[in-house]
Every structure is written in C-alpha cells, then in structure tokens.
Length: 113
Length: 113
Image (cartoon, rainbow over the protein chains, first blue to last red):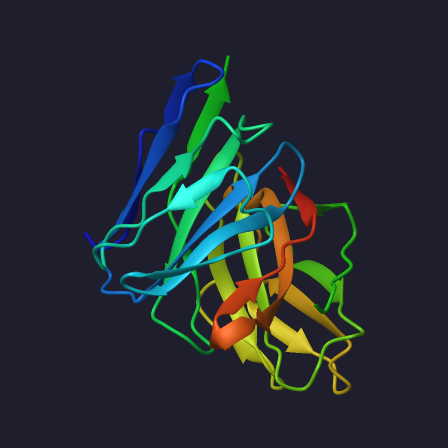
C-alpha cells in the first residue's frame, strides 16, 4: 500500500530529553511537511522540505530540527529547547511545488512528563 | 495570508445533505480553496479543492461563489462516519514556491442518526 507512515503512534518522554519522530512515505513525493496540533486547535507548520537535502522553517520552528537525507524520510527532532512539546504531530507530503494536494500521515501523539 | 471563517459546529441528520459554509473574503486570484476533514486523533483527510469552478468527486461537491469570497462543501448523503472536524483552507504559496496550508479551527460536524 502507498502512503505515509508515522511511528510510533504514542510517545512518552521525560522533560529535557530530545526525541525524534519518524515520517516515511512511499508515494514518490518531493515535498514533505511537519505540523503540530494542540487540543481544539488547527494545524501549525513547523518545517517543510521541497527536495532532498533542503528544508525551510515554518511558522513555529523554534525548538525543533529536521533532516532530509532521503526522499522517503523526513524525521523531526523535538529538542529540550521546545518549551511546550506535548502535542499531536502530523507529517504530510505532496507531489511537489505548485497546486499539489498534501496527504497526511496518522500522526504521533507526544507526551512529555 | 488569506484567512477563512467557518461556523464552529453544525448538526445534520443521517441521510441528508450536509452543507458546510466557508468565508474567504480576502482570497487572492491564484489561491485555491481546499477542504480537509479530521476524525478525532487521526491525520487530516483530503476531500476536495477548487479555484473558480464548482468541483465534484466521489466524496463531496464544492461550490465556489462567482466572486470567490465564499464556498460551500456539500456531502450529499451524510453518514455517521462523516462526523468529523472539517477545515476550509486557502492554499498559500510561500517563499520559493512552496505551498503552505493555513488551518483555522474548522467546523465540527455531527451526523445524528
């Protein structure tokens, strides 16, 4: 099946620890995105990547880092500098630049204790 | 960024048509209107998008007014599985051509038996 996978579904970490969230897609999409969603709110863009080895900050990049070494993978690291890391994290991908639809993964719910 | 306004909640009877309105009075000429929905604790699901003309697919119809300042998503025969939060989004082309979806708080649609 083609699609976007995120793992794990639920993640718990202690305060002060870095944690990396996985996002993989086999849709052959060039562009990938990370969003954050807080309870009762819409999604906010953290980082996006239009092509391998390139990425740009979104609206709320502080305290996060990403890499794009492979077309299929776009991992997100939540660092200890992120003040409120507990949230629902969503990864998306699209065919590329232009009017291309974004398709979302199932999400990872991160809880920092 | 163009902003959208949606009612916070709506109810619809099962089997009836659900009509979800959206205002996007500041939309510019090259910005598309996208609709997604999100069932609790899942990733958003793409429904439909359009620029000027009305659109229809297997899930829904999208009616865009002639002045493009508002649109309506129509689910022709709502089922209980259509209960979700529905987001009306204006695609925004950001820096270097990368698209950015600006999510609001959406409309919580409840389908009643």
